Image 1: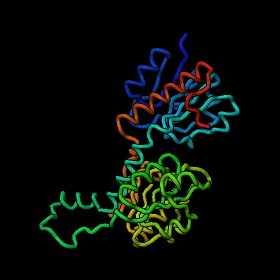
Image 2: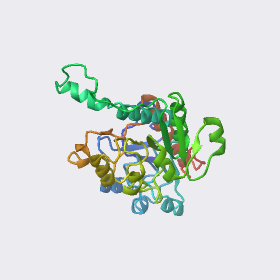
Image 3: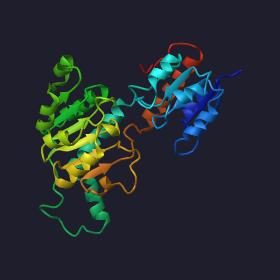
Image 4: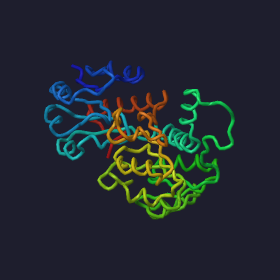
Length: 319
């Protein structure tokens, strides 16, 4: 008998073709995440779960699935999963690191450029029929070439961001929970204490995991330390930035602009007051959204699931 697996969202064809022949698969094929109650109801006899970071995977859900062997997340982060509860129950947990590094760094730098040069504002200006002539002071932005980039979190994506910045002759500073001497040599980046990085940087790009220490890391105090010309980019996790503090900073001109791929809450409600700020760009969590990256992520998740079902070590364990 094939092992039973529940999938919380539609998988790319290449990943589905690896999973379906080996398992009895049921799942949720709607655009929006399955309601928590639906997941609980469907997990009773399941041995495997393939999920997304929008799904809450807690102890109660695990207890509803006494046969569960493996939780396979299609994402790098796994703060939506109660790791302690999974460990206590002997459930393996996997994630999908590495394959989205370049796509995410590409998008983070794209957001930086778009915010610096006011690309979205300019496009809206044209579409609204306001473009009448060339103007010397029309939609002036900030220089990127030769500016200072501060990277908070020098992991894989942070390193990839630093490499892109070198192409623009940027001075790159970083802050990390542990200093990275080898990266300083290889990438030409300079370590700074957190407050110093905020004060010196023209652009600040966030690349940290969501932990109790990083939740609300960018709050009103942090924003008050930034240059009034500074631009904040977040492709990490929404709750790393305090949304109310960011709103006040954008409204008052405390910082020049921000560009977010992740928000708190997520998705950001249509009426949220952050969306009233013209100096803010918000994307719907698409930093890793290339055909290549998303397909590879799904395939990694399937391989984690299949290994866990066989009782083998996961090829990509979350911890």
